[in-house]
Length: 187
Image (cartoon, rainbow, N blue to C red; front, side, top):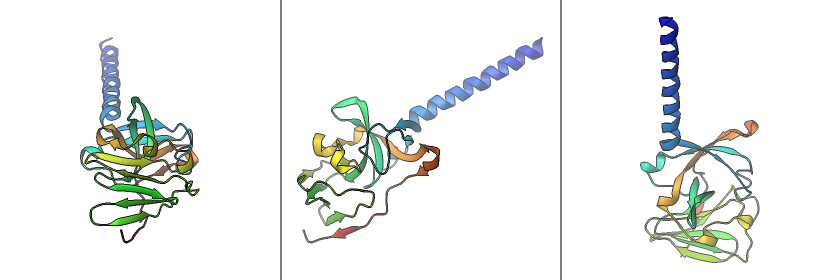
């Protein structure tokens, strides 16, 4: 009888440790995220199941091109998935369907291979970012609700960086900042 009792206690301890580990990992390290909508097409589709790394940005700042999950600045209960385009202190200009980023020393025209369709040419726009602000856009530029509509994202609203697509199985992939080129132009 004692042997059965200790076996049950041991099993409960194992379950408790496993549950605690899952809670800690989910709260501080990584979190699942389900894509809802088409603002990130073609990179992510409605229903894609992603793993978001919540730890990295405690050690470094977001990089241009990374796909992030953020709290919607106008309603922190809502979460969005977007791509980082502009970094703190930069000016983002959208003109003639091209995205340009200017900092104090250079003017870059972004080459964005993840874009499927050209941006609507009527969407000219300029935004200068503060010291803790990021400019984010969806990859489906003509159908994305993003910083062009609601302004820059404060760094405190960034939840984490997308690292893995786990579903659908045939599209499992790891993600990082794209190695896309930029061209420098005279400012």
